[in-house]
Amino acid sequence: MTHLTSLLVLIYITLLSNNLNAQPWRLVKEIGIFEKSSSFCLSPDGYFYVADQGSNQVLKLNLDGAVFNTTGGYGWDASGLSRPTDVTAEAVYVLVADEDNSKVNKYDKNLNLAGTVFKRDSQNPEEVFGYPLSVAVSTLGDLYILDGENNRVVYFSFFGDYKGNFGGFGTGFYEFYRPEKISALKNAIAVADDDKLVLFDLFGTYLRNIQFQQRIRSVKYNDGKIAVVTKKEIYIAEDNLMYEFNQLDIEHDGVWFVDALMSGDKLYILTENSILFFEKGF
Image (cartoon, rainbow, N blue to C red; front, side, top):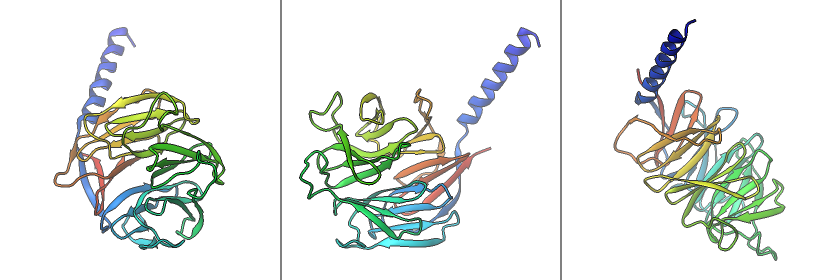
């Protein structure tokens, strides 16, 4: 192949790629009926888990919208929830940040309660957290909790042993202003803080921040891609240390976005009342 031919092929591939990226995402399906959802995730075995603040419940749904299990309901006992703000699923457990009860619950895949992380009574002030806003589990198996009471991240071993905290007042190079959500990337921790996405290594060392035009409502990592969500915009980047975010062209009006994630070539968007399925338009 000549140099000219190679150049033409490269230009063609680049133009084709740019054209595909410019194509709008079209709505193909909608599932779920929620009162006021706050977060969702897609488990490794292909189920959605949704935190619904309106009903103070967490629901497990399949991709067709059938509800398999629920847990919670308003209350302060072990089975109750009050303002579930975030949900994440890893290989074994589903974890839920229960804001008003200042705890994180661990459930099995069928939403049976398997344990609770609660540190308000601890004698060690470094590990105490209150009003958790978000929760994540790193590739090392550590549990990260966004501490809404103290504007910081506190992290533990998966069994609840304290390991450290960062982002709070006087704790390092970066101090949070108005943190909202946290997500564990492959080798980093991402925190949505007002209009910035702030990146730390797995031990809480500040790496960098990326500024967006509006306040970030959610950051979600799934299938190698990072989704950043504002009320009306969604940005996607590969988790490749470059963090080059591209805004998606989404053909849907009239709703505010709550959360989003990508799985393969599918885009899933959580609104307060449902989950929207999108595909690239052609």
